[in-house]
Amino acid sequence: MHVVIIGAGEVGTSIAGSLAQSHDVVVIDIDSERADQLKYELDVMTLAGDGTASSTLQQAGIEETDMLIASTDDDRTNLVACETAKTLASPFTIARVKSVEYLRTWEITEKAFGVDFMVCSDLLSAENIVRIVGLPAAIDVDPFAGGCVQMAEFEVMEGSPVAGQTVAEADRFESLTFAGVFRGGELILPRGDTLIEAGDRTVVIGSPESVQDFATDIAPETTPGAADEIVIIGGSEIGYHTARLLESRGLKPRLIERDPERARELAEELPNTLVMEHDATDTEFLAREHVDEADIVIAALDSDEKNLLVSVLAKRIGTDRVVAVVDNGEYVTLFEEIGIDIAINPRQVTAEEITRFTHEGVAENVAVLENDQAEVLELELTDSSEFVGRQIQDIVADLDANLVIGAVTRNRELITPRGSTVLEAGDHLIVFLESSFIDELTSMV
Image (spheres, helix red, strand yellow):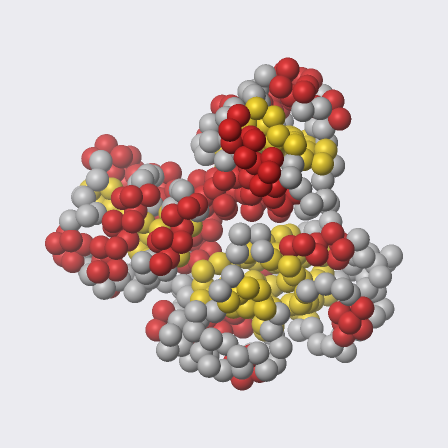
């Protein structure tokens, strides 16, 4: 495809990096220095200019463009860019927005603003947080095959029961597959004799029940079941949507908001959330409200610096598990290094969702891991697939690719993959692989 991306920030750069290997990508940014820098970073064509201007879009080849992705930090700029592109040609348009109001308007017809697919970063981030809340020990969770299969990533902490065990020793669950291990920036495809070390990030794929059992095994003290004592700090849009989604699951979170007017508004909108009007940096208040006893504290203020402060305070008073929203991707490592359990970067979440959508022609579902180092794909086998009628062990032996088939579903029933498993047309494969091998794999399916 010929793809035009407007905005060379974190979102646009991540998407461009994912698509550049197999597509003709042009990136437009208003900042000429950033455009020049990206040209050498990713080896893509870049243009310095206004992505909403018809002259800039024509220079980018809008008449031949298959897909336009508007990913700047400004909602209106993205919407105008899509509308302008539709006026000049007929590309498939994707817009990134923060406002849920724009998303709701678009959902009425799915044609508003000249947008074919809209991604709301605030709502996506809240959904990501809620998935993690449902599996407290995990740092990433994604459903596959209509919920029959779950992929989860866990960090193995010092003292964890599986630290020092081999994969064969740790794999005590019938419908679970160890798909990958990230160690010091290196991806390892695990074998039975692979040793699991403290500090590793392990990716497992299996039934939701087996993943939950593994979570209990890997970190029994943080996985009592679904977290039921949840404190949200900050009534931002992400904080609000997180509380709303938790309510829809039957949970009753508490939310701390400093601004009286916003607190009153949230209390009216969230009938099953206890909204407390107070400054969350007041440690006496946090102790008085027993925040240290919460299963999870979610820092969802509108500032990375404030989220860092309240996260540290929550940890200091004894909270076991803290999830923080981190808007600047460069700060994610900082948050994790000082002991914050999970850092959710809305820009990265948005980039992953857009990347997932661009793969929909070949994959039913996609999860992007460790800054696009690896991906988990759900693929449906057609009658003409090279995999049909063959055993998994023969397929893997013939492939010059680093991958693990983590699960197979057939007629919505989970099949734990073994080397002797014979694949059939209509099967759904959930595959873990290095991102660089995606094109090779999908060409065979």
